[in-house]
Length: 293
Image 1 (tube, rainbow, N blue to C red):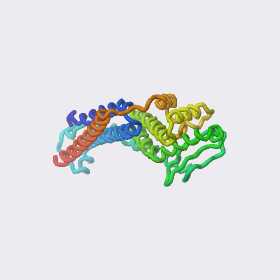
Image 2: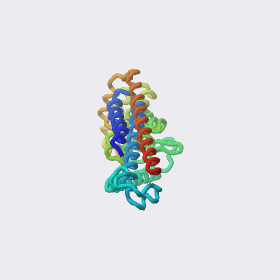
Image 3: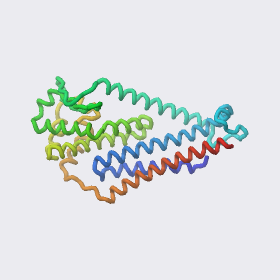
Image 4: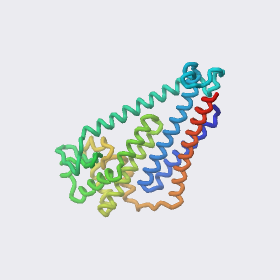
């Protein structure tokens, strides 16, 4: 196995880094999609690289080669990787699968804890909270104390923000990148970035619905100043993300994304897709070649 199999991995990592910096110049909706796709492509490319390394190393064991139908009359290392590297990579893959499995299980547990929320559900609580609950229909949970603390216009902002989370299915983007980040902790900053951008997306959607970006900014600031220890615990809450940055973005004029930036973002995603395809081709080529040795 030559070093050229690392080329697709490096290519996708460069694209992922480009998507990180590109997101600040894109509309929040486009930034969420671009960054989520880039994270998933980087994750899949890395996993394919680990599978190839693990398979190449483990296949140096005679009974494994027999089970795979590969030639045993090869000298050690001819399958492409040392046995030690194959064992370590295989253990890492097992750890990644276990971490991702626990995370997915926890997400379903948290989802089932709320049950099916339909429409707006007001709960009696001294904690001012409001968050979206995805489901077959989806709904918004809001506390009575928060309703009491806000006026009519601010309540409409909160509901518009939370309904935007449901309408645009922000939980899917968040769960996808967080699951990838659980498997590969190096992706955690990208998961946090996607979560922040979903809040920005919901902010802009709420501003379109109520007709005032200043009102949305004021409401977010008011909610953030309320004494709540639970508001930021929910991923689809109006109090999530970096509130200061969100308010600053709403107060500033709405930026217009140049066409060339959008085209560059598309080229980044396309390049990352090509990197994944190339990595998959290397894996298939390795398996086919080793099987005919």
